[in-house]
Length: 316
Ligand SMILES: Cc1cc2nc3c(=O)[nH]c(=O)nc-3n(C[C@H](O)[C@H](O)[C@H](O)COP(=O)(O)OP(=O)(O)OC[C@H]3O[C@@H](n4cnc5c(N)ncnc54)[C@H](O)[C@@H]3O)c2cc1C
Ligand code: FES
Image (cartoon, rainbow, N blue to C red):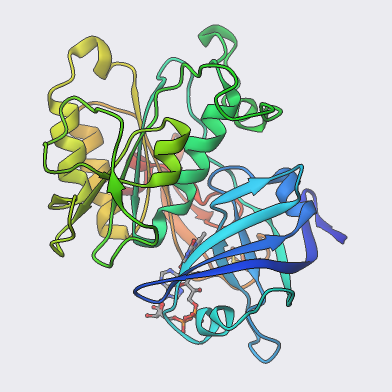
């Protein structure tokens, strides 16, 4: 493993497991201890998918276990790079550069974390929920250092200490979800009754999750994930609403819709942006987007200034 740029490392990872789902969606578990040690929800890796492909491809980290030294990615095949990735077998080597990017920064004053993931935007939301559980109690508001919340040493076992963060994960997909949907064991007031399907992994952790789709998938809310979010938010009393912060990752139209919902309910919202990337370490400016800052509009690099941005600074 060679140090590359600050905390970004170039690492020869090994495939530990590769699980395949409907819709050409895949979950790849990689032995990548350097990356696993520093990954945060929202950060990503730049993967060399094949020797003959000149550019690496960015993929969000869905889970990372520092002790065991692995990271997990969830991806969908859309072109040559992801197709090459899908052919990897257990034991194969793959070069990863990471972890890259600023992660989500939940604020202690808003422990009701509303996480929205669309399609292959689901991975950072799973990671966020897991890290909030591990972090346990939010720090006192006055001394809150949001980034430190997520980089705190993981608890020995999930659920060892009851967490006061209250994440609710809502996911949308028009393809069958890349996990076996089952009825949730956790009641979520305000969610329409028909939306009872959940992600089993989150349910087992005690994190409520619900699913939305326009594809008529069983157990799912029929509509966009943002409509499901709106239904839940609309029935919260003001005191609970004041504790909500939104986090979103998914296609750009979904992120724009999340920004609108956040405006409607006067909520802070952090979004994870996607852009085509060449270097992914801040050197080429190929991923720059216009972002509103206190000093006016500025061009920011999605790879290292993001991929997480305040929603209204991009979609306001
Ligand atoms: C920070 C970040 C995190 C990402 N995380 C994930 C993830 O967790 N799982 C996942 O499946 N994908 C993720 N992506 C998108 C993924 O990088 C692209 O789908 C991938 O690079 C496509 O490569 P390819 O060679 O398979 O396809 P290409 O042949 O390069 O492209 C095929 C199609 O995908 C579109 N595409 C390519 N790159 C992007 C991109 N960056 N954003 C939007 N559309 C793109 C192209 O317009 C084209 O239609 C992420 C992208 C970014 C920037
Ligand atoms: S991809 Fe080169 S600066 Fe972001």
